[in-house]
Length: 324
Image 1 (cartoon, rainbow, N blue to C red):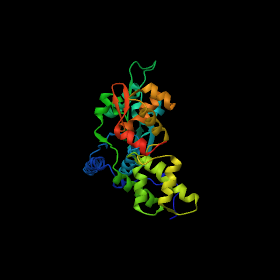
Image 2: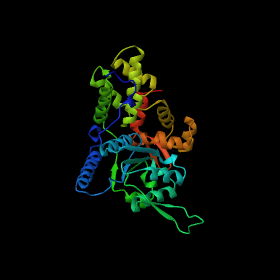
Image 3: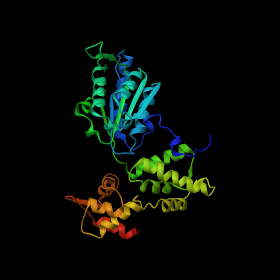
Image 4: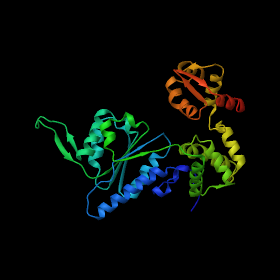
């Protein structure tokens, strides 16, 4: 088997391959065992529906695909809530699905209220209702197959309560420890047959990934491989890691130059309003609030004081040690 060149060439095909989300895996494996036992006893039960919730990049899509493989379903219909712009598109997906289909809707909170109601009816009554026509004064109920439904969301409370509460299996994803992330990076590097100088190299990749596998793999590990390959070497070394993060402008906490610029501007003042600091770093305030600030708040580099933002002692020290 030749070595891979892209971190996304490897697909997770079993829940046993999932690292760092032990509670999620345990819940799913119990439900899978119960489902297969009921099928052996002659029950026509359906697995799920499943709701996977948690921060972006923490592995919800990987787990959804692992569930699909565990179920041994023949067909996977994968879509995104933002792509289902009309009820007819959702109806088409639900009608296309058969008993051996997994329907996976990522970012399901983006579904509009009508689409969410269709899903609720599909789950609770196993039907969808065709619109009224001139020939029929009432809606026609169209029966649905026993497909497996998996929803994933970064903001589950944007779902209607009735839909959210109908999900039988509810799994919450958390951020990863450095040790778990190191294990994930090692697993992927080994699967791709990428050689590395030591585990310390992989630990550094994990350390600068904001506790998120997607960043550890898609940005850090991939770039480290590219740096080594650009020098026509097969082994990722410590010097490659230094060069990798120099090119990415990512520091020891995983902050990039824009995030450090945010901290630097904030350090000049006792506190600042969101719109003021957004103008200082040249980004829309919504981007600053949703992209830059969450990690800085989580790592206690900044704090909110009412509607103002202020840098913490920890944040000031980080700026001093990692000057722009």
